[in-house]
Image 1 (cartoon, rainbow, N blue to C red):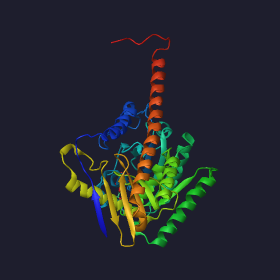
Image 2: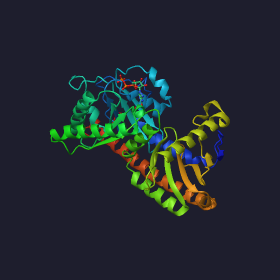
Image 3: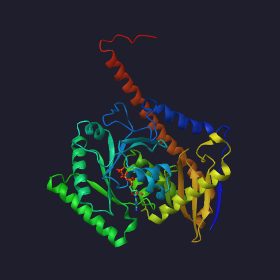
Image 4: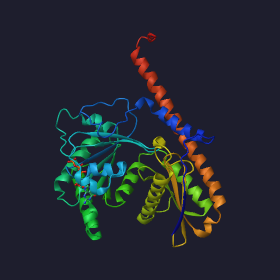
Length: 394
Ligand SMILES: Nc1nc2c(ncn2[C@@H]2O[C@H](COP(=O)(O)OP(=O)(O)OP(=O)(O)O)[C@@H](O)[C@H]2O)c(=O)[nH]1
């Protein structure tokens, strides 16, 4: 395998940098009124903490004690190594974290303590479920899951009553200790029992999606990618753009990755196989690691990834992997045959058009965010002055 990688980390702004600044600043602007950013440690909430004005979709992590909820969050979003999760303490309050890596990957994760009680009057579950986009229920596959299944049923039915638009995602977790046959067997059993319970309650219309996951391989990143993709309204547009890009460039497969979390936010319409996805994750690791070691020029340089970041890796099976920066947090990773890579000029030109199109999609999103913000400000000021009295000037 041969590889080339290139990254520069100049802190000085150049002409093109404006385009990047335009991205980021507008993004920040758009979210200025919902500046709820806090680390997990700082973001511990009381159970009745209201988040009235918030717009970002929520992803809830629920499940029994020690099922692996905090480990998932730490491994996917904090680069914690799986072995370190052995030392995580039990969560005893709801722990909220903002994930705003890029314009398309922007949500909040709420990690719930295992023993949460729906009948506790201080637990305002209606408020919580109302703003929820996805509810991930984690089941420990190495443990007896009878209790977990009844908890899943209770949680899902409560949540559905409050908000029928929630995506219900079930992670059959810790499958690293199981053989392939055993994994399939567990998935079938859990799937059947959970759906039977819903059918018994005449709630067949609730759809549950199941994933086999482990923090010890890439399955957890892949599952999270699928959960997040469902929350991206621009997904069909992104997929379309990727389809057009690859079919005109002789590329076999392309992924749009969020570099920080290694979640892929979109891919073309050809099927994804796990090995290809793992190779992409490894490539991103190589680029970021090399850049961290050799590229960083200053303390405040932050994430070692910029508009010059790119990498080419030639595999020993005549396949080439090509990574290019799309925005400050997004990368395009492509797989193509060596002979197709001879037309690199054409690929780069098409990439340029693809990148521009992504910026336009992003532009529309920012405009929508801004008009929503304006609208809510107007509503708010009307409420503040019901008789039309102008606000006092200071
Ligand atoms: N084998 C294996 N162990 C895991 C996996 N994920 C988490 N664990 C382990 O499971 C244990 C519990 O993990 P936590 O993340 O603390 O579980 P939790 O659901 O947040 O627990 P509470 O905070 O008590 O609700 C830890 O020892 C983890 O190392 C996995 O995929 N495979």
